[in-house]
Image (cartoon, rainbow, N blue to C red; front, side):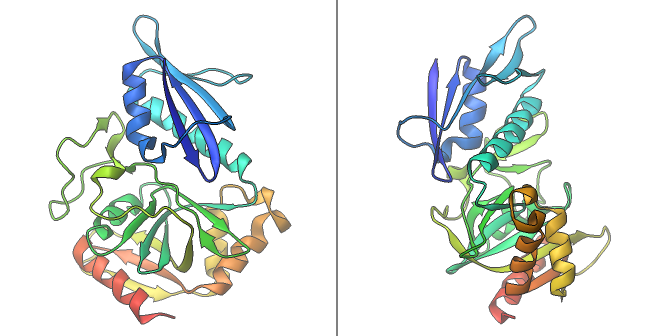
Length: 273
């Protein structure tokens, strides 16, 4: 049994791996969060069993999860892990979003699944941005800082040739997983003040990217729709969405070719409110 010990949002997570394939997958996805030992706040056992071999995810007192392939296994683990870490950090306001840092501040990128968030984040990492998260944006509503959640960056398909993936990027049945150590940018290890929120819009055939400032009311509604643990917060989370939206400039970003889109994001942040 190989033991992988993580430190995630100041909580200890233990993952016992009984199979090399399962160990490789969780290490690829979460290896950058490795830390020392200690009593775990969250304890998993993962592996494969049976003929044909089936992946499993087990936690004491919980129903065993199974998956037929590597992509499904990681998706199930990601989902369960995200839910449990939210329970352990109910004080944080979790948004389904990517978060990158430029200079001393962070930008949040919000969109529905398949909206190009991860692809844009991958491109921005080549243009002066540093990495906090690809999927979860844990916001401290008191300080309006975003905590890092440095899971491997996950892409459903290969990005355009202008921003190719590193050689030997791990691939599962559900896409590519760029290990944190292979990212072309620094990995942020501490909470970072939020500076702006971008809501991504993808329209096939659009020749040039565009950005427009949106009202705090529209931004709060969009944030609330993408909040993952609103019921853990005052007024069922609406107050948290309003606090973020009224304190920071929020934009709708229509994406196009990656290079000019990255330039537009950079210019928007440099221009300020």
